[in-house]
Image 1 (spheres, rainbow, N blue to C red):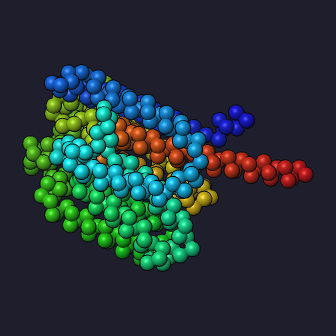
Image 2: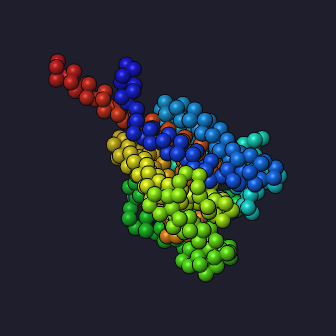
Length: 384
């Protein structure tokens, strides 16, 4: 029994998740200890890594717990999850309750813990959309009846996140929604129409706010305003150039010495590149490729429409975050403020990524178990 239990677990997914998160802890400390010392009210080189380690411990506990909870349980909770998600986004906008950092009101403080509700909303939306669209398979080819109704909720969530404002997270939710609709079996013309509407909305939101437009344009030529809108990208380029093939050595980054803003969060990959070189970056990329490949395989093999859509939603949410972050750091995409999952400093992001991957691990475990039971039944029938 115990052997079967161990055999059912997706050890490739589990080990890769914890390995990448442990690597993230090391890099958060390396990238943040100077900043921790510089904070007058802190003066502690371990300040950021201690908080990240606390979240790592909490997230690890919930990972081990949630990977044993049948994923179908969330199907029943879907209506409550989405209501709580919307309430949490409203709470962020209430003066005195929502915490503002760098001009954005995206957090709620609970004592020593600072929580970012939009991170929780990501998995909440995936569960909700997977549940609704799994129930609409009979008429998913009908736009009004099958595709449109859940998009009203998506629009509400998108609007609330844009009030914070957080275009990166809002855009990632739209992209995941489009992918879930695609895997639900919607018609191509419906997907194209939704894509055009989403693209148009994105461009309108980008050009109507000067700071968003500067962010979107600056990545095309960051050196045109190297001390302004292009500062982060220029300093990231310098960090990667310093790192070269083998890196300057762990802890030896120069750019984290107040040249690269927030080196332990959105641009931590630049510090990985500087200190560990191309090999360090390749380790991170390969780890993500393993997680994404496993997620796609899990979604493909799962026989339950809800489980399949849930798996695809989770893995592509992570893939989109990785794409946005790596694209921003390398100058291939605009800077969106999306953290690097499991690696960047940020408790809410780390926790939700662990929870999401724990659900994915449970889907995999359930699928493996069902396959094993079927094989056992077939063998019993043949022997009879």
